[in-house]
Amino acid sequence: MRFQSQSLNRREFLRTSAATLVAGTWPALAGPAFPLPEKNVRYTSGSPSKPQRIILDTDPGVDDAIAIFLALRSPELQVEAITPVSGNVPLHFTLPNALRLIEIAGRPEIPVAAGAALPLVRRLVTAAYVHGNNGLGGVEFPEPKIKPAAESATDIIRRIVRANPGEITIVAIGPLTNIATVLKADPAIAPMIKSFVLMGGSLSGGNITPAAEFNFYVDPEAARIVFDSGVPITMVGLDVTNKVLLRESQVRKLEAAQNPVSQAAGKIMRATMSRIKPTKDETVVAMHDPLTIASLIDPSVVALKDHYVQIETSGEMTAGMSVGYYRGPVRRSPPMETGIPEEPIPTEEYKPNCKVAVGVDPDQFFRLLLPRLTANA
Ligand code: BDR
Ligand code: CA
Image (cartoon, rainbow, N blue to C red):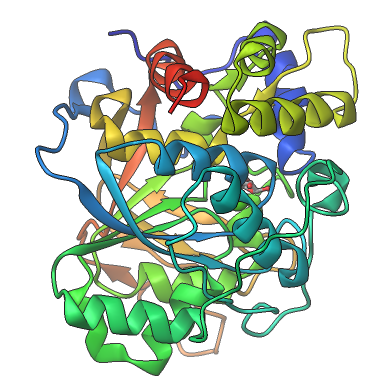
């Protein structure tokens, strides 16, 4: 299979300038902090023999909607609960959107538990300019008939993980407020979580600021708690998600298929394509969240590389930036001048806390996505 390299040529840059509008306004201009030699990249392969049990934390969101559909139409995944959070739009949209989406997918038995309305300590920043005022591209779907679970997102995550220690992967494709709230409320739960698989971050520039990817930007303190948790993490960030770009021909395939999921996905993507500002180049939509789901279904769609990732929370311009080291030493910013000479610059032993997706095969991703959404269930 072919993995796209980290560097963007001019044509790719023009394409991703439009594509990144799905979450923000900053194309990924900068290269990775360090070169990523091909020989160090570890390609994963294989598919699960039994369904992976996941909790899906999400802020639907146009690409979240496609991700939810993909997860619900994939027998390799067993979705135990969906936990909406504020992000692309406020919770009072993301919660009913999640209910609508599982209803459209014919999976009303999956519990949907309301999460956080606000980031841990910051004001909520949304991306309605991309996702539409209602988060589904402005497409009006009927009010959901099903109701949210009686439990909160925090309670349902704690209950399910505690009842199944080591079994549950938490897949988070929105800001990490719900996950951080769980870890704060119940620190002993961390070793019981199998892993976090996150759509978020970037080692090659952001999409909402030059430094930060949207999900980590919205709640940097939450992202920091997650990366400090000791739970195994896979980070599927803009380095790869900006390379999986849905095109007009693929939207037409969604529209042509005659099943409720494909029809809904087609409407949402059609509306998103018309919202994205036309450029001289093609209009495309980055499939950030669906790629994250695809990486669980078929790990060989991405190439992973060990990193130590930390989240910047104190910068005036860089909050939410993910800083990744693929080797040590890990250096912090220099200490302030105190007048006392010979204060050493703090360094830490290098210990990876995360596998970062550094390569992707976009064709393989679309070969997985489209048949699953267009098939008659
Ligand atoms: C992420 O931000 C959101 O707008 C998308 O849904 C995705 O989760 C991309 O930066
Ligand atoms: Ca999202």
